[in-house]
Length: 173
Image 1 (cartoon, rainbow, N blue to C red):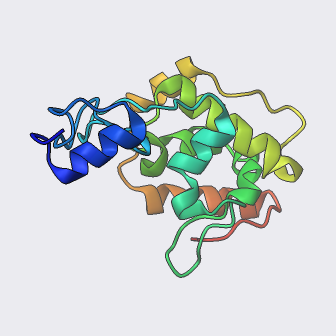
Image 2 (image 1 turned 45 degrees about the vertical axis):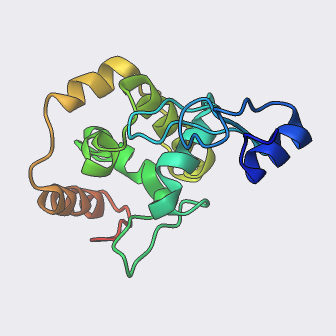
């Protein structure tokens, strides 16, 4: 052990896992006293992939919309708890999956459908119309081919339609 540095020798003695050449590595499959260190790169795969819509919401949406879906008026982030109101207005269904936050979430078509359905059934269940049908990946794929250009303008049109139907929908977040 005289040829190894003090830290490497200590780690090797404590864990029995590190070879002398691994002790100085920073990235890759380096074994440390706390476990395996992951590669630091933008496209690195998750060590613990997420399989539930709720977990996808927490990772991709809750940072802005909050864990309870309440959003933030001051940050102009929409409240997700009344999302079902959009399903009651012509054009609202499409709007929900075309907004930039959904399209740019990093989720694939199936994941967007799963998360949107989960949000509607859990956070916004009181606002869902009786005839609602769940979103699917094919519908999300079609929506990606027709992105929204004027989100605020489209929302204003939908709010006006909602008000004509007697629904209370906020003008803006």
